[in-house]
Length: 372
Image 1 (cartoon, rainbow, N blue to C red):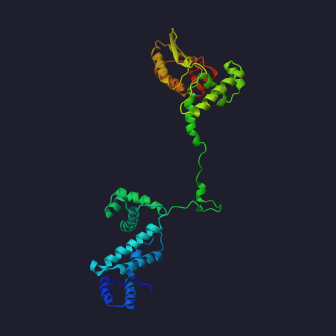
Image 2: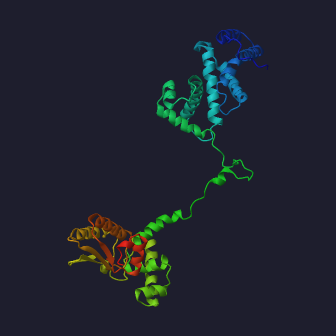
Image 3: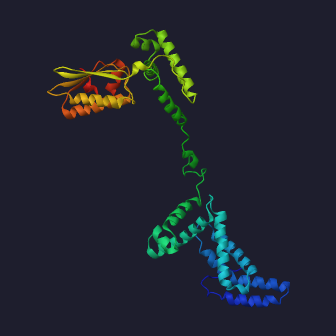
């Protein structure tokens, strides 16, 4: 069938539809088929114009015209002269067929029908307003033109990204044959251990200081059992028994909802204690026990009070000889005391550190507080 120029004058399809309905009433089957074909051919330019409105949206114009012609045939077959204008009915039916085609065949991901229709309207209005305004319209301007909420426009624009999703098998453009999916990283195998690490950290706080220190020296300090025994002043066999007992308890606790009771010894000796003495030259604070996050605030308050007592040029001496293990909370206490003493111009020295604690303090940048 020859293509009809869209620049030809618009045909009066309403009058043609009335004539078609009148002629159809008294015709036999062969004549009815001939009249139907002639009327469909007469209305084809309308279907073509409606299809051309949706060009440039990822579908071939020829395919859209085929869909429009199918809608035109449905319009002719269903048209009832008693129900109004043929042209209006044809526009609604053909446009509906084209939109249905976009919904069913061009969206790569399921999007609600109302959002699909709105996305198509936004695309059409955006093209029209871009031509008129010589710039891309804002969501507020599009919403005002369509009479919808700007938030709905933004949501529809976001949904439009699901229209043609990229394939993970698409080549990235080089000669290596690499596909888009190859650029995505794999899962981190250590990610599943985060929860176990957090649980282990809480369980370690339940162990006595000696056991905790031994585990730190063995698995973080990479010391052998003989080296640990030398530091603690016990036999290597005793270190082996203590490590085995601590690891067995941790293993059982990791597999239980309720941690078992530690039966390896009394933990009362690990409670924090501090004694303060005064002389003419300094205030001496002797700390005993483990400094952890549960008692760090109390120790901070006691040491800040001791700084306040340093008058007439007296300094502060912090004796940590009785502290076998100093955690991050204890380091934070020393940092706070150092800053407070600097503001008050009070000299602070830390003495009596055990080797393991001294190493932690030095690595924390508090070397100036240590006794020279």
